[in-house]
Length: 413
Image 1: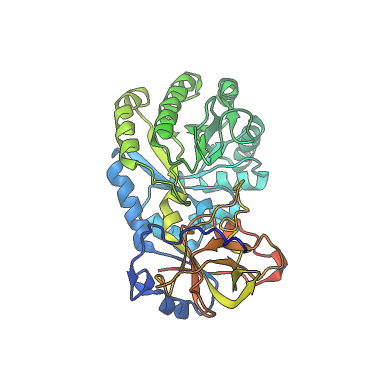
Image 2 (image 1 turned 90 degrees about the vertical axis):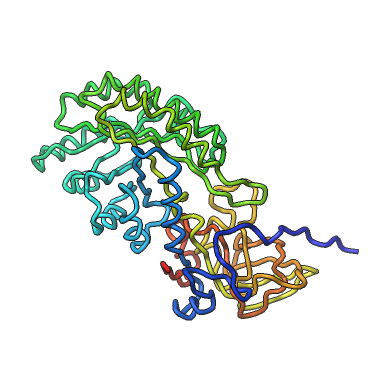
């Protein structure tokens, strides 16, 4: 006898309502939304969930913490425009993202530009726009000063610091040890001394140590260390610290067994640090910069089953979308061991009998798997497969041109 395939439970907590056994997005049944979009596959983002997440953060964090949205998580212009009315600032990582945010009403002084390897043209655009450039190297500082002279202005700048500590238990470590991001903490004093002789308006520090963290204790320790590091560096600065970007790192649960971040614990701890921080940096604006935490749980990737086939005891649901639209759900975007995102049959969420099936895309590669051996066997040709937790790092983080298939649509509802 063959061994039955192991399965991953399909049912996972999510923020979307279900009516008449159908997922609701933006108050609309999924099948109606698919008809409105006009084609599959597509991403849908629920604006009410994004709004609620910002309100949740406002309630949990100290009142003098400013919220900035990292555009790289989801640069869809409609999403950015919606968040513009909710957050206090934006962070971009390219000139392309800068164009998107400059089309909003966000004041340029509340926009920052991070990322290693900014080209001279990008620095020129940033200086001309009047945004804050997070400097990632000494050479970048010299280039920014030169383009500022050519433009006849003093560019706004902060120093992105590669801290001498890590954000423990983070999904992606972006600080501590040798990194391509920022300037090593021990090199920053000399860089600040040089900045004093350049036509650059110093604004402060950007200290980002990691991302996708679900451990409140790790975030609390990193925030303590961030304030301590900023206090050590501030005496070397050529002016007062007017901006202290504490990074972010707030994670969302994707996989079985993961629990949501204890946001209240993080907020209460941050509130306890703020009195000392305000005394140390009386002119500073304190920023928490988040991406996926704003939008990740508000998004769904929807594809349609176009074939159903059996192969040696396993059912395959072949969908019209795959890793070329959603690289992360395929397991090829940062996972060492592939794990399933939460996946549902969106137009038939519950089934009286649940069989095991895998969902694969149309690409000619075995990597094109959206769900491996999950309780999805009740799906039929024409049904809509929904990958949840898909609001961040979706289309813009996927190889859309791979094998020449059409791109995915996007809708904010």
